[in-house]
Image 1 (cartoon, rainbow, N blue to C red):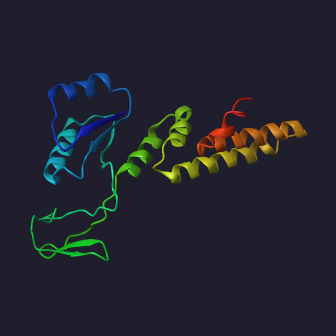
Image 2 (image 1 turned 90 degrees about the vertical axis):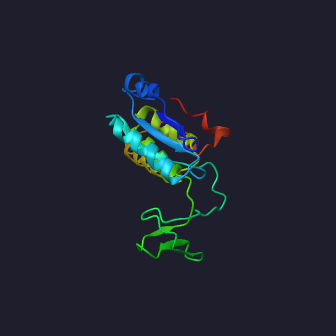
Image 3 (image 1 turned 30 degrees about the vertical axis):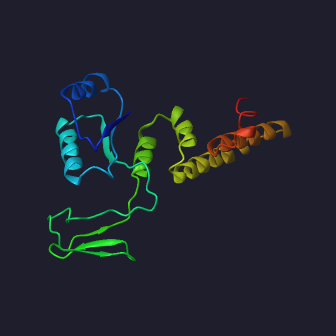
Length: 194
């Protein structure tokens, strides 16, 4: 379950903890702090600390996400470690260096969705993991990994094909599964079931 929190407002009500503990306790839970690009670091750290203090056993992570990166760079007014405003930003290297504590950080803004997708794939049951990987458009490495698994299964079953029709069915099934993963919708449904 993705529990999405608008980090720009950084508001958490007591009933939300009750929802997480009593209604969502049986499923893996991931907290998504969206709009991280327009919320303050202080607000996000506060929200993260609040979630961590709940010590939910089914919490699989807290993820900061933004909706659009569009080549934005992080804007640093102060160092996120020591609070100093004595910063050097190197545009070509896309880094910020604090002159006081020597903390270095990338200025490249990422959307945070890659980590959320990967963690979700790790906790999903196999029966729905393939559908989730196919539907998402963020993490192509997961699609490649699933495709390699399909090809590996194909080679295992391929050696058992004794007739041309059985071989055709095996190949058609593999191609259908791959077409679904990569959303080749035009023919993906035709050989999906045998």
